[in-house]
Image (tube, rainbow, N blue to C red; front, side, top):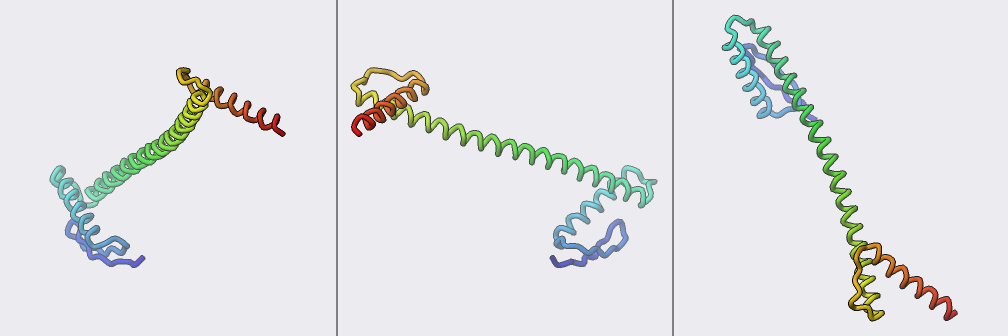
Length: 144
């Protein structure tokens, strides 16, 4: 990445800053730094420029730590949501399989003339399908 040179004025002092950030970014940063330094000086008029700068640095690092903690929490939440989404897809697939088994069982029962018989749950549906498959296997074995 290209290095940019930037002339910065902070609390009346001029600095040359070299970095990869854009001019717009640095303008915003410096405006915020100068604003916060002025605020600190207005709250404590007797404070030295050095102490004001140290307080500003402490506030900035404190804000950074808070933002990093928030980011970590958001990343954890995102990972949890991804796990939940994967689990949801897994459950949807299981439901589709159960519905397919139930449909197959109903079809089998209709072919066998059991139109009024009801399937109460997926276990019964699976039993109907299994019994039908077992009969088909037995028929094939008998025809050999």
